[in-house]
Length: 315
Image 1 (tube, rainbow, N blue to C red):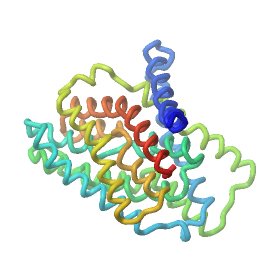
Image 2: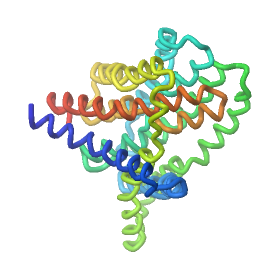
Image 3: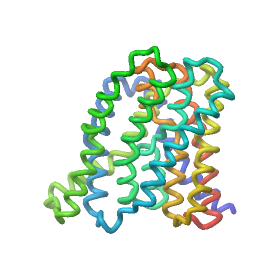
Image 4: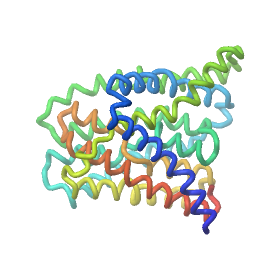
């Protein structure tokens, strides 16, 4: 049991410590906003796309494609939004906050935090995780628009559908995965010089992403509408992944698939949730509070779930 606990801490705690480092460096003005903006650009447009391209292009895409798993990820995400809507009725009294609550509770930081956890446990993100991004990230964006429009029909977000589709098509993660699939099918390989360069960006992606998350952390946002934020955190980090994992067990998924399903549904809320909610007229304060609280709470929830999975032999 002690070995399992040490292993669980060694998997989850480093993710938080890198984020904490970013927070401390920002507080001491060693990291400034210009650095954060530049780092986010590097991660979003260069490092993570190269990581995804590497993962997909170096695998046998056709053989590794798992229709059942991808379908579960898509349908499960959509169902979770419906469940969260009814859950929100228990804790959110103001209609203007419902959209922010739902969006913050279903949209996980799968690419940044999820990839970190996968790498800590398995050593590589693997092709299946990359393909999940190709399908789930677009679903996140579409559901976000639907939720924020339908829960606040008087806002000006109705014309955001076109922008959402444009963002999906131009998303560098999606482009990288599509190119990776083509490269895999064509057996394309970078020359060693370019591959080694891509590998350096691959290694850079995860720590730099976590560092920027920590640098954007705002403690004051933790206490905005704390009751709703706590309710969202409990659902996001405990209830939602537990339901998803139990469903995965029932449907006969393998250990690696169950662990990936946990990560998809159990990682903390993505920062983009707060950004998109604010842009579409939702309650940006509640959205930011959910991001902060789920990020802090994930230190304990990730450790707990990894400990359970280790004890029963899933990881």
